[in-house]
Image (cartoon, rainbow, N blue to C red; front, side, top):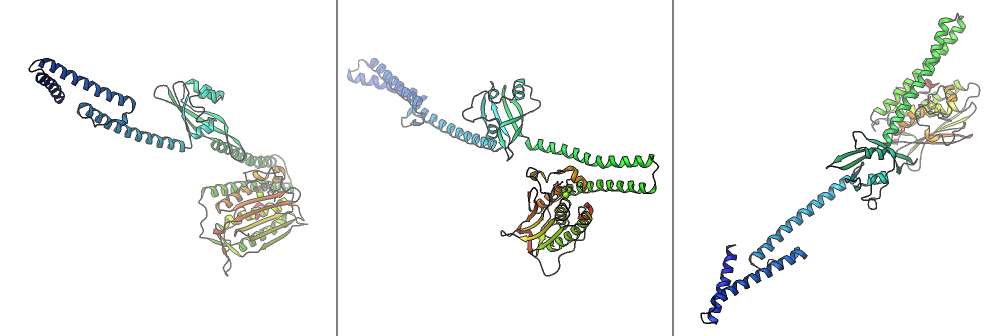
Length: 460
Ligand SMILES: Nc1ncnc2c1ncn2[C@@H]1O[C@H](COP(=O)(O)OP(=O)(O)OP(=O)(O)O)[C@@H](O)[C@H]1O
Ligand SMILES: [Mg+2]
């Protein structure tokens, strides 16, 4: 500022001196006025030049012109550069933040004060059927027409969530509708943030849990009712010794049925709750098949004493398998027990252990029984699922056998394949991964010290 005053005075003085020289001592005052006016004009011109640059292209500011305007231009340019850098950093941070929300498995929608979409991530766009570009600033209530959702959004009471069908998003091979839980969180005055969560699997698990409890109760109640009936008969009716022993035998059968059911449930929960078997324990496949054969022949003799079944057991690859021997035996004997129980006497049952071209080993049980209709096959491994309930009950089945086989297969990294043709027969196969196989050593495989509760003897 002092420089500015000094330059102004200097300009006036120079004007005065110049006029005094030109007009020999006269008009010095006019000269001073002219110098001052020139200085002011120049100052206004430079100020306007700066204003012009600021109005059009602030980045093009130059500090070449000195003085206060040059310095001002310089400082503005520095300030702008700093601001630009800060804005760029803020933009980058915002992009990172948005990318993180995009990556979230939960949906996020931001609504302005009027309930119009300001931003949404891809998950929410998929669930609500929103086009992230086209539907920007559209009212969400116009796009998601579910009455429960519209009422919830308008209520401004967001203490709980609302569950809707995300009809636009479909997933899975069965094309089940996706169930979405939506919760609104107001922020910054009247703005709202919607958080969505896919609860399809949660609801399915809950439905499965309900079915499971209902099934277990039903399965236990049936033999329990029969038992209670027999107890009442024994208490109230005078029975001779023969009748008594017949009733007692039937009671024993029902209590055995309950015991089998409880054992199977315990087996299933143990399989679900424990870590997968390690690769440390090897069992010879031939030994497992030999044990299956013993039990299978015994069961066939009991169930079809006259005709029997034509049973063949073939091992074409002498291998050892890593895993839990009791679980493997349980899975194999379950498949064989089904084949024997569901194939009428005189039928043919073939059990094989062989290596496949891809190196995996296949344990397969083929029967010439009634076969299973295609619509039942995907559901066979569900707990308590039986194709023909009455027939299965006749043979003492609870519908847990194939659920156990599926678990054992999963725990050993094996694929479980079911093929069946109605009227021709079925083929159940377990395909074990190469990592769990090795050629058998010359010494005989380890003996089966513990036999599963689902051994064939138990289910007969
Ligand atoms: N080899 C087969 N041939 C025809 N149907 C079969 C065969 N194996 C299984 N099934 C059908 O699949 C259903 C489910 O089998 P699963 O072994 O899970 O139960 P289950 O045999 O009824 O009872 P559990 O094995 O618990 O004693 C059976 O009820 C039967 O209807
Ligand atoms: Mg079974």
